[in-house]
Amino acid sequence: MASDVIVIGAGVAGLTSAIVLAERGREVEVWTCSPPSETTSALAGGLWWPYRIEPREAVGRWALRSLAVMTGLAGRPAETGVRLVGGTHAGLAPAELGAWAAGVPGLRAVQADRLPRGYDRGVHACVPLLDMATHLAYLQRRLAAAGGSVVVRPVSSLSQPARAARLVVNCAGLGARHLVPDPSVHPVRGQLVVVEDPGIDEWFTVVTDGRADPLYVLPQPYGVVLGGTAGEHVWDRTPSPCTAQAIIGRCSRVFPRLGQARVLAHRVGLRPARPRVRLEAERLPCGTRVVHNYGHGGAGITVSWGCALEAADLAEG
Image (spheres, rainbow, N blue to C red):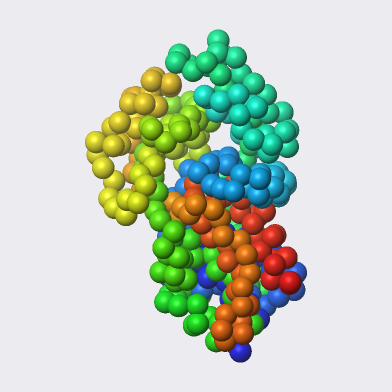
């Protein structure tokens, strides 16, 4: 066997899983069909917040473990791409968020008179907001420092890495649909617009119950990310001009200055959704142990370190 561990996928789930294993002394190689800068993770808005992901109890545990790691990384934002930024999530009270909310320092209710028109409740919190280009580059450097490597090598079946390593960690995201195969994995299309920052210093989100598209405004060092959409089972990655205008319109009703901001970029990503995250180990017929870590939906960043730590524990089981 050429390697001790092969991790499939170089998005945030794959890189964090590889780092945890490498820093525990394992020899790790990441196989990926695209470099980290071209993964779905690179297109993400970057806000830590549990969104479109189940099961709820486990998600809360993974999210809070990730929050602890990212809070440490936020002390070096230029290096890691992680900042702690205050913001408001409108449309829910703290009690409606789930048990994880009690673990977020300073999370508090916001009264209707402090919210934009149309919202009667909300919460305010200071949580990680990641510049994903900088963060993915940091993760690559950290993996290399631990002795791991990233290889652009497409994988068509689990038997390929299973022949080359003692342990395989499957972080293939949407690719798991065909790789495993797992037909329950499906895309949830998200379109974003990046505009010049007219002076937005806090994030703002409204996540609906599925009857309407989500709304989010995320100030990043490179501009303000405006979103978004949640198209179930939609594979098209082409930005829609009409959708972009609708996104800008919804966001500018909350922050009117955004309506005149110059558009810098359009992005479309496919969230790797599944009814429940698959985080478990199995033994392939050839005898190789596989740890599955995929199906994170719209919260891959939020649970990345928590899932990576649990995946590493499963690898040692």
